[in-house]
Image (cartoon, rainbow, N blue to C red; front, side, top):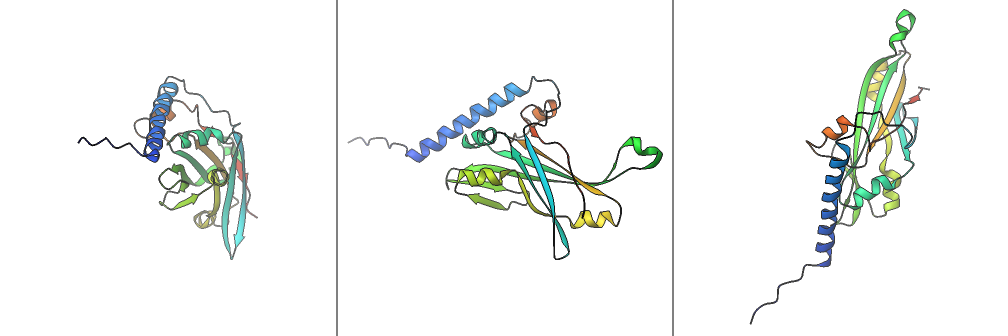
Length: 206
């Protein structure tokens, strides 16, 4: 008696369907973005806010990049892709005197990268930082609210580099709705289309 072939489970079909959609979307991104000319992204995709917090003699930076359309990030994630937000933090010293026309001096610069994606096996949304530390969210709304945020980033190295100088902090956020892998990352070097970028925000020390 011949055995009937087993039927794939519903979860298996759902996950593979999402992977197929993700592959098509990734290819579409590459085909769509590659021919575009180099152009500056209009910083109108959201609003960046930041503040310093002092606690027990230590200074921390908290920031939030509120996007005009979070669906630009959620749709690729729901298709099985990953999105990434990068915060750039600079310690800046104003240039004075005859050389002021050269612009301010960047004393120190650090970047913080956070990747967001959906774990279809565990049925949760995940934010993963550069150290590999993961924070999971069962609700999409909670994930969306936390995605482009920087919480209590320690500024110890910035304070030491400041060393009493008259400096200020400058902060910018960039969101890549689709995190590309090499060599497709060249797409973002050729064109910033599709990247959501904030204006630079100045944060003064108390």
